[in-house]
Length: 430
Image 1 (cartoon, helix red, strand yellow):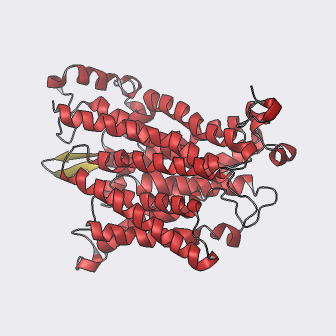
Image 2 (cartoon, one colour):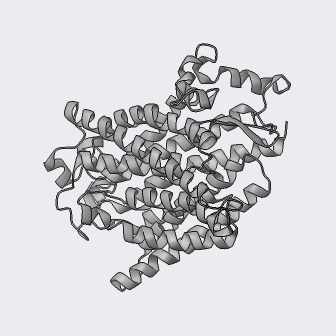
Image 3 (tube, rainbow, N blue to C red):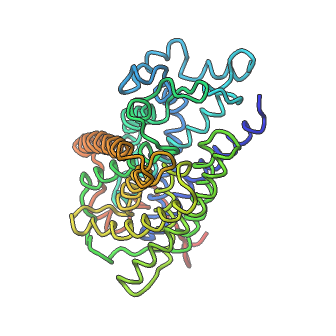
């Protein structure tokens, strides 16, 4: 057993787990002061629920055997009887590594290390969606949505993208997107960001616009809180991208440097657009630009030379800065720009591989086949996630209700939903 790689994967898992509280800060600072507790609880609620579901059956679905034999990963359900709750065999293997506790690719670390690492991906993906419904969602309804969406959307899509078997450096089986289409998605541009972005768009449609929705009316209540969230997200993203190499090697090093360069360039691209459009480069724009660059480099971090990663970041930052205005043009209230950053950024990064990816890019004479496969995989995830999220969201809205009462939304929903205020001032201070 390689203790170095085992430690690398476990530390990477801890870094990715930190991203969800980081996301809570990032989102929390951008809503109004009387909704910040509710906003942050959507992320923490996702952490609690999805971690439990992952242990119970999420891993069994996402990494079921025979990816090509199961379009939705459903064979993972039927594997539960021999692999109790998806994890019993991994526990046995990790306790007896000489009897098969190694990961299928041949790297020498316990299966449970990989199980833990992938759990954090499931958690953050669900939490990302919540930014589209800020200031107006019921916590209980969100938890129902999160559980159902993770079960029938994220876990199967993770099977399509992340579940594959390598033998002697060659993929011999896997989910249909990674194996049959040959899509390159190193750390989750499709399974995480396009998946979450499409679901966020669906929920924004289901819940409708906030009262008074218009450009500039909803300003961040706490900019430092948002920038703290950006810092935690960027820090954790090194585990997200470099950790996806599942080894402390040259691939992880390439992913690491690209996770520095791309978001830095994206930050510059975003604030340049702001300066040209509005005459000011804002701190929220800088933070959002960095996140847009992190999103875009996620699928491509091991496929690009660092210079092309910088170019990707610059383009993604500029495009996402322009894309956030789509909600005003098209009339959907994506509160915290999940669509503009994660859906658009995920698409840009996924398609960029088809143009500039090492050994596959059309710009280097390899034709457009890879670009076509990248586009097909991205669109498939978008449509699947959007349609099912729309159906789940409408069913919840028509039954238990997804949106809070109008008067509660106007007043701020923290006290009504959670019985707490984020800030206590003067006589209210304990």
